[in-house]
Amino acid sequence: MAEQPTLASQLLSGNRRALARAITLVETGGPAARELMGAIYPSTGRAHILGVTGSPGAGKSTLVNALAQHWRRAGKTVGIVAVDPTSPFTGGAILGDRIRMQPLGGDAGVFVRSMASRGRLGGIARATDDSLALLDAAGFDMVIVETVGAGQSEIEVHGVAHTTIVVETPGAGDDVQSIKAGILEIADLYVVNKADREGAEVVMRQLRAMLNLGERKPGAWQPPVLPAVAQQGQGIAEIAAAVERHRAHLSQDGHMAALNQRRADRALAHSVQELALARATADRARWDALLAQIADRSADPYTAALALLDER
Image (cartoon, rainbow, N blue to C red; front, side):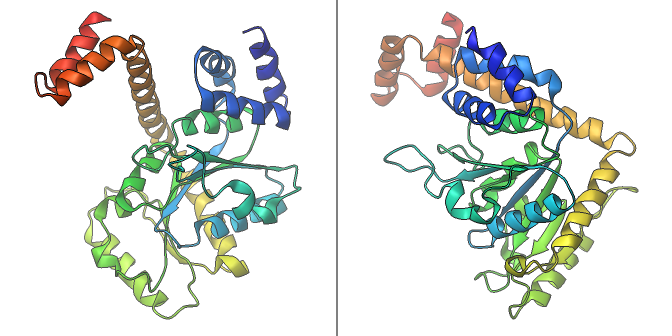
């Protein structure tokens, strides 16, 4: 335990090695990780957190690369968490940050880390919330979380980000009308990547038409639909400008306070769930006995769960 205040102070001073160690610690979890988060949490709340999600093959990583390079040219530091599918054999991230983020290598103003989703719905790794907070506390101006392309389950990114970008492409096999509403409703900004391909204008028109169908309160943010060819850097400046406009919008009329309240609600709920599960499984023999009862239908899962909670 004695090491953690030192680790926290090193991280807060901008030490990148300390940051890497801290993220490894929160991935592992446990009392030491909770102590670390308690030490750094008062220093969070300065970074703008950007969520990037969308269908597989949409070019999310290329877009994140291009945005990071744009913000670095503007003098901003950028932290990136890339949430990867989990290998069923190793439990680790399959794709890995160094494969997808090579153009950012060697830049001291960029920190990239990949994390395994570990099967959680929404493609958000268990420790992603804590890792974003660590990057925030370490002083990064922009913090980007790129999530697993898994369709509607990607809506969870909306709970961790200030601004959410949904990336679509032309010729993805389904037109926009068939995209599940959940992932469309979370977007603060739509990007049609690979816009040099045939059908890009059609996708953009469909997205704008869907947005016009919905009712918005007076003064509400109107998500823009922007084209990009991220691999060539086209449209990146316009996307970055739209992110800044949304950030400015959040600072008006209490929007940021409401958003932070929503993010706090989500973080508290996840923490309670994790701690409750850890306590419930601490007595492994009792857990296994209840599993056996559920398996042979002598008890149902809800009754078994209540039995565990009543015993705590």
